[in-house]
Image 1 (cartoon, helix red, strand yellow):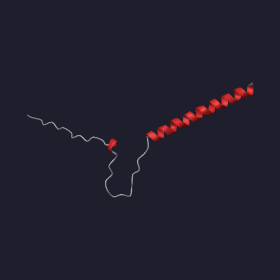
Image 2: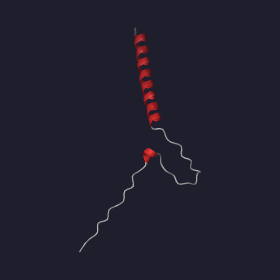
Image 3: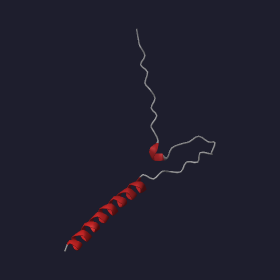
Image 4: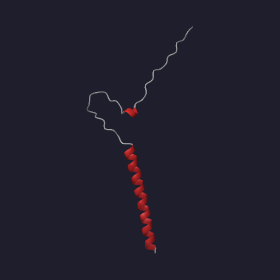
Length: 64
């Protein structure tokens, strides 16, 4: 009986470790990195979803 309980515990531990590996793999797939060619001379533009919005600063005029 003790042998069966030990085997179940080992199987549970392996299933937990497998779940952790599956979650880590899924996270890696979702956060994949795009290749950037650093040897190219033209200016780098980030991928479309990563662009920052440039806004002009409004300057107020002081009237006396």
